[in-house]
Amino acid sequence: MIYITRRERFTAAHRLFKEEYSDEKNMDVFGKCSNPNWHGHNYELFVTIKGEIDPETGFLINLVDLKNIIREKIITKVDHKNLNIEVDFLKNKFTSTEVIAIAIWEELENNIKQMGASLHCVKISETENNSVEYYGE
Image (tube, rainbow, N blue to C red; front, side, top):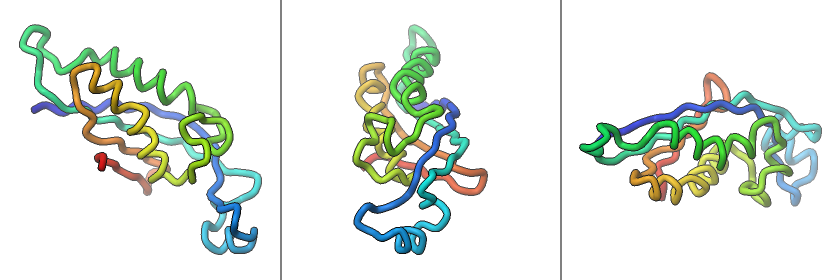
């Protein structure tokens, strides 16, 4: 079993809030992340896949193919966007880093399988101090 990780970066805005909460309660629960005028991050996305090395090619999958899938399915949709209102796979979802990681997993999982590998981990670094890792259900 071999593990390969691809890193991508994107910049996006979002707001943590619950519509059913008052503005005051949103600020109490989510702090400055509930700014009604949004706030942004320079995210780092790490996608780790796993599988067996193809004896003919000498690698798990072509890394150019992995890069292209991540960019097509994720980066082009989230980079320089408002995650709350512009990203199809995040519609009606709370945009915490935890939920974003799960949504990215769901977007990539079948495509990775079709390439002959398995998705192992989606990691998102929201800041240099905070990151989330999701390993599937």
